[in-house]
Image (cartoon, rainbow, N blue to C red; front, side, top):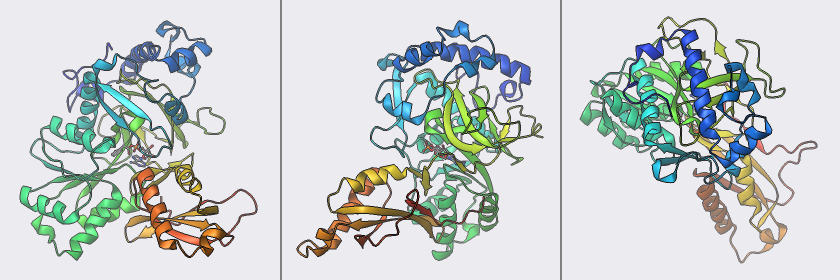
Length: 443
Ligand code: DLL
């Protein structure tokens, strides 16, 4: 890809971060043509673009021509599993990540070495933009593995030159120990885990002056300005909002700078559109709608006009920090039914698929999410068939445990399971209400 290399980028690149809009748009147009070229190597886009009358990059004459390209959805990505979106030879791929929250086939993203370097540079740029430098000690308190949050920030932190502690998520006692032993100054976590850390600190009697924490990067799930303020006040730190999604690399798509007035979305790596999810037309400037992204900085898995389902809008006007890349408002929700439970994406259909495959389970079920302290708690209430209820040879507890284990294997979080007698869960008159999200809506 005639695209940026590691040498061009690194963690601070004034030329790109403060590029005049006209130059930025010229850059985007060139990259869009590259990426269309790459995409035409995949079976999916060969067909899709041919149907839209796009034979090659030459058909993209201006940025406005992006509208000729059809949208890509999560459904398309799943249909293309495992290699339908791979645009380079397999032996040039050095890593894959897969997104959580999908039924059946996961959505898998492949990276070449240059892709990893470009992604790393974007994450490093985000980190540096919050004021972190190589003198910082960075504890990455988020899940490593197929989830992009762990390795994405790990590489970005190293690129900035910070001392990176790959602590992963969970185990607060050990997290405190690491913070104290190594003088951690910055952490990365989901906002709910940060709140949990604060309550555990009190519980375990960890004194604030025994740790040197100054900043936190918080993302992977929606949270409100009030929650940010609360974490900042309780922990005496600055919290920066971090947005990303696996399909677009992972973290490093949009991030707050020190002004904290919206998330700069890196427009040299992404073309940004905000559409009305019903009409699919662009919303008027500044209004909220669904974010649609085209990735310009990845050759192994090009994805054009991806419907993220995330609802946001642009913050008007320039940012005092001088960066020219537009800012997104805090993401407030989604235009589909995906739930985010303690940072993990879950579709109600995943739960349905698991429980309905079990013969003991009756016809009705209900998913409830509420706050348990600062963390989210997911409860699956399901009816069991009359025969199961009457059969006293198989204790209901064993069935409950089987449902819990099977669900956990599918959705990766540990739900509470409640069994109810057939016909006892509420039946709605119209469309079935399968989800009750009782978490306070303070966004
Ligand atoms: O959550 C990538 C990530 C890792 C972002 C670490 C930030 C920090 P996925 O698992 O694919 O990837 O989930 C992506 O999470 O479409 C949003 O709905 C939601 N999300 C991510 N960041 C935010 C945020 C990672 N700051 C999905 N605010 C996205 C609100 C967020 N929602």
